[in-house]
Image (cartoon, helix red, strand yellow):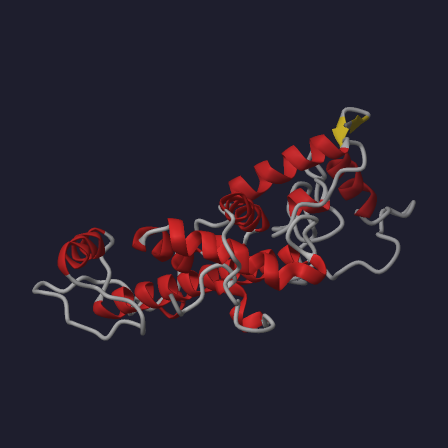
Length: 260
């Protein structure tokens, strides 16, 4: 921008020059002729006489170094989101090198040994031998597990198996409780009806069926008890004394108890 052909800086510099009195002397307080104090020249920086060029004034976000993006009220939320992502990318967030103190220590669960794996004691009720152990060793090495990592994996697997076993035991107990109120075998004659069903299983079943009933608990299911009861009634089999009132502990052996 210019005034009378001069820039704003030149115009301001002219206004700061001392006015001349009619007799040619300078009015106001001006420095002596021999003074070393420089008179500001147009275009030199440092005081109010500096020229101000167009476009030199920028927003606070561009003028100063910022670490966070400030939403522009003139933009939509989506546009601000895109601008924020661009700002972070240009700032290099996430690309800064980690300090030595930020490095994570290696886990003791990884790092397969060069030689054979060490033997360790497995949880009670589990066995790690034969083909299963050979396969487990191969998988452990593929996953780069250390001896501690292998042991930890087996411990977790054992906990999962035990939880599943507990859940199944609860289910079997629920079957036994529901059988007591079954429309066919439940009610006041429940013990007698179970005796008929057990007699049928004893007379018609074999050792394999007995093992199935003991390991799966299916003998507690009302549908299986009804099946054995109806077969026993059709065969005219007398009921086998079930051994007294059933408790929750005996729920898994309603049809086939420990005695044969």
